[in-house]
Amino acid sequence: MASLFTKIIKKEIPSFCIKEDDRFYAFLDIRPIAPGHTLVIPKLEVDHFYELPDEIICDLFIFAKPIVKALENTVECLRVGSMIAGLEVPHAHLHLVPIISMKRFSFDYATQASMDSLKKMHEKICALI
View 1 (cartoon, rainbow, N blue to C red):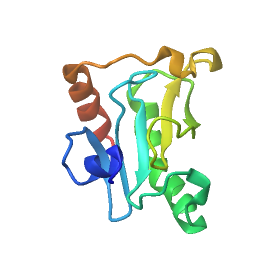
View 2 (tube, rainbow, N blue to C red):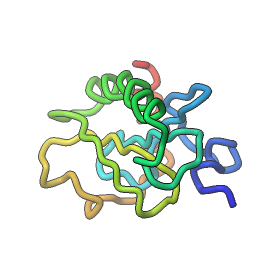
View 3 (tube, rainbow, N blue to C red):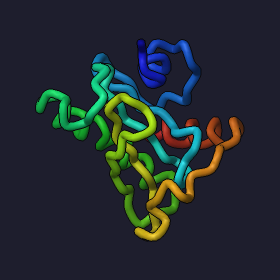
View 4 (spheres, rainbow, N blue to C red):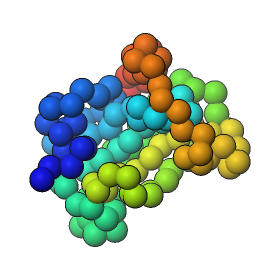
């Protein structure tokens, strides 16, 4: 059965896509830890991140670099933190989270975002990629 993220990639579930190519897909998290929280996923459906082929892991981080730069120029933050957790969706993914302190770099701070706030953030980030 296809994962939630595979359904998003196939456009069966709507998302605010930030960037896409033939191997990767990045979109705004609907329960962000902070504004701009973006998920970067391989289109290859693999549950555990470190079971991905080495080339995919390396290229995923290269794919994420311009997104990080766009987030840094869109959202007030000290840096963009990266997190690999993978407990909620069985599809390897990288979290990019604009942060101002390690204390706030926790899923305890995740809240449901409004469609309006996601749309506005999507437009700001995409304008810089």
